[in-house]
Image 1 (tube, one colour):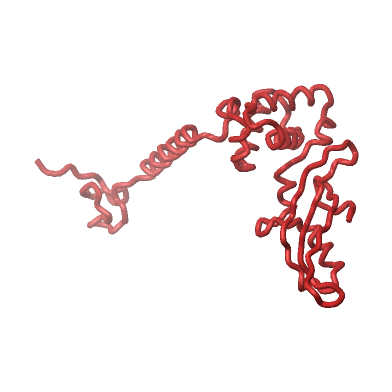
Image 2 (cartoon, one colour; image 1 turned 90 degrees about the vertical axis):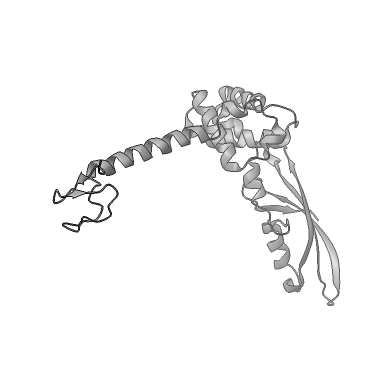
Length: 227
């Protein structure tokens, strides 16, 4: 019994399945019709949808009981996906996502390692319901805070530039280390910075110096040089 043949979509000649060109009229892919193409696309779209559901985003339910120590290891995008799902579940308008992210970021980075995420999100929600948007006033977005520092050597960009601007020879500047801590003190909340560096003095000698400063929590702008 011979191989079943299919009519060419253009001229109607009988063509073997899988033939790349019709031997009669020369049209390419003579057995693949527009209907077939649409069918392939529909199947592909369904497959992608199913794959997306399997892979999923970062669902809040998947992380509600995860300890803060592990939440800190997630990327900012992953944390924001978790937060977005939390806001939907809690019926909180997404316009408050930034306020909640600051609260989440602050608590994830400052509370005990073994606390579950659900606990701190509950605290954030309670404060929000009591105080509205103003509840975030003294919470710190740690991702934004960390962006104030160089990934290369850990120096604080704004403070380093200020130091160089006041040196005898800015070219001699060499960063040694920078330490910081977050100070929460109402209106005076800030980042306390300590930077050690080497550089040339007025006589050309290389000396090691230390600068203490305060920086704005949100912008990194230097508020005050303490010493």
